[in-house]
Amino acid sequence: MRIIQNVKEMQNYAESLRKQGKRISFVPTMGYLHEGHVSLMKEAKRRGDQLIVSIYVNPVQFIAGEDFEKYPRDMARDEKIADAAGVDVIFSPAHAKMYPEQYQTYVTVEGVTRNLCGVSRPGHFRGVTTVCAKLFHIVKPHVAVFGKKDFQQLVAIRRMVDDLNMDIEIIGMPTARETDGLAMSSRNVYLKDGERESALSLSRSLVTARELYAQGERDADKILSRIRAYIEGHPYTRIDYAKICNTKTLEDVERLAGKEVLALAVMVGSTRLIDNYVFGEELTI
Ligand code: AMP
Image (tube, rainbow, N blue to C red):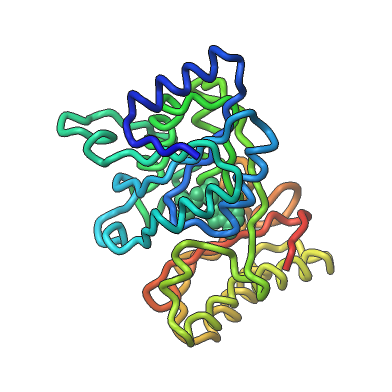
């Protein structure tokens, strides 16, 4: 496994792969890798000849007061996990090279980033789409794999790729979970003992939503009030949002009619957790 930190070196290497006719698959991450990341890598490995994974904690997607400084980082551990997953290249650039002093260009996706995390984390998606656009130009992938756990992010990336005619196939992968149902996340290490139990209220809410839907419930408010009461019944929780939205527009819906997603963001102690369930899809809890 090769480790590249220099932007130009990564571009040159990607170009040489393309000239050899190799298909480049790419998984962008912020590191502190877990099984969710590994499932993306395995899928990406299957879909290309050379698997490139970026590990970069992107400052531009953190808003003021968030956990950029304390976001967990462990490069030695990440290298072992990536190597075992069959990664060919880790790209881990320095901040100064990604955002030099004169930096002033951003990519903004409009409609689909307005609701949900767009309300509580203004500017977050602008940071995500900007860094992904930059990484796509550096790594030059044919295919890039993202997790459905960050549902709004995946919708925004697909929108950007379509709107800006980027010639990249975008794949979404199911959410990897701990055995008790908690969605895997690098941020789960922040959870203290009692909080870990309360964190399960998110995934258990998805199960409740699936059951209500299976029983024929189609009124979004009825489903949401059950879920809100359930989550609020747990200590340390504060709901940021609990919404049911159209999967394409991410606008709120009143009734479930076709493709809708239940999206949750909950503070558990000082840790912000997200999870979601697309009605009618498989839920492995
Ligand atoms: P992150 O390092 O958290 O920025 O995530 C990098 C990629 O891994 C994103 O595409 C995430 O959606 C994806 N990811 C994070 N957690 C999970 C999970 N539990 N299951 C599947 N994919 C995930």
